Image 1 (cartoon, one colour):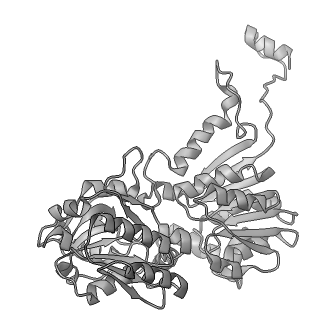
Image 2 (tube, helix red, strand yellow):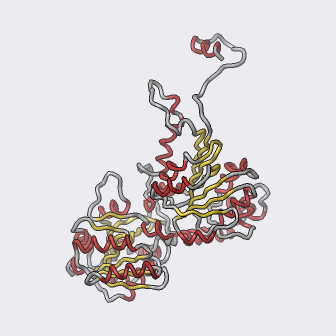
Image 3 (cartoon, helix red, strand yellow):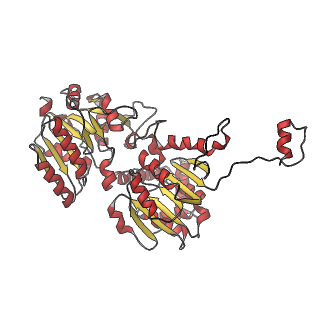
Length: 485
């Protein structure tokens, strides 16, 4: 098969602007047949269908529900009249140069499953960065992969969550067939948007669909993983101290009201790592019963907003911010919902201008590097003196799918590490650089597993004093300080 005969499959949901960029850019360079598997609502589906029908050999296949990425690919594998090599490409890709199909095709041999970007995951689908060994599973990233469709039909089909190829890759691994996958080096740079590496062939807007629609399905999958882990730990209750600790917490919550609410109250769904609750108690207990304003980015099902409303009491005002319009229906007494795109500083500024001063800000939103950095840079000024800024799930700074990587420049963790220099900028020797707004307002930065907490106070230049009777003769510098204390 020639490269210009390879069929192309993409899965689309409520993002006609993204699929438009993809289709228009492909047609600049290729006339291949394209299949758009779409699960959009009627308005967005109509726009996408109209666009597809304006070209020859672009076929729109619509569903009356969000079919999701994995099942959309699985439907195409099972039902489309396709054979030989097939390109699967994210709807948020844009082609900028001819040749990517030819390059992928040159790496794909007839007996292989597929080629593209290869990472390693564990059996739960989480990325493995270090200590890669024979138990680590090679994972072909579905954002851009060229596969032999006949070989795909021999193995488990893609599934629903945010790592849809997990079951397929585990099956290949267990059968000793991971050699049917091959790495194409430049695809990594496209998918991960490697800093300082000019894009080759394509531009990838990471998680573009979820930023518009909240359709990633990752939260449901991660909750199922946590539930599975909890079930396993319950079985190990007599032999595992951590399991014993968790079990005790579930039964006896006198020391932590929040975790008691999480397990025992009638509330909307909340998705939190269990160790976060101790951090919450350490950070927020001083605000209980106070007249405060709290803003949380990332509404999901609205349960955590109800939790904050309960915890802080009747004098508190709770605000939730999310990109997904469906969250607006979760507003209730003392809980207001606002729409925002954390990828856009303009959108964040517009939100900030509609809110009062804030005592607590919690970023549990999109978790990408841009989202976390943009939100801190815009909303630090909105935080009142004495307030707490908390960013959750900072482990995404180590996950390539969110723009992360160990010590990778531009991650949120590396960004906050640089703020340590600003925190202590009073002590720069031989420098008359003006101190930043952060230097003059940040009292402390606390690092926890997957959480960063920053305390805001009015900071004046630090002074040092000596008090008490010296035990030994003072050096000249000590004597000067002592005399002026």
